Length: 151
Image (cartoon, rainbow, N blue to C red; front, side, top):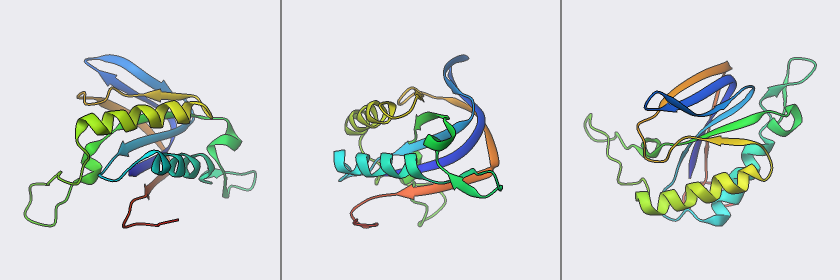
């Protein structure tokens, strides 16, 4: 599982010129799944996102989490996080989980995340337009899989 985390002042996602999700201060999560991802993977990543200290404290040091600052999350599915560009110039997406399984995991991810913090969503599989006001900019890639961080 990969999540590209962006600290945001204000963001929204639209489908066919209609806003389907929007947040003020918080995090935008671009979320991708691969073979082997499961509930344990999701729980690990939710914990990591919720406690990631990337918001400024009173001294201007990134020392606070999304829970500390009371923000929201905009979660958007993005299979292209598993693009492989090692050969040639056309990305391969064979490492991205098939859409049926990925949709199931994406729903579970958002439902569980929403138990802890207000979570808005994009539309899985749709052609979406994201308007992200990245604060900082702060962008961090989180990854959890069989070949990465077995904790």
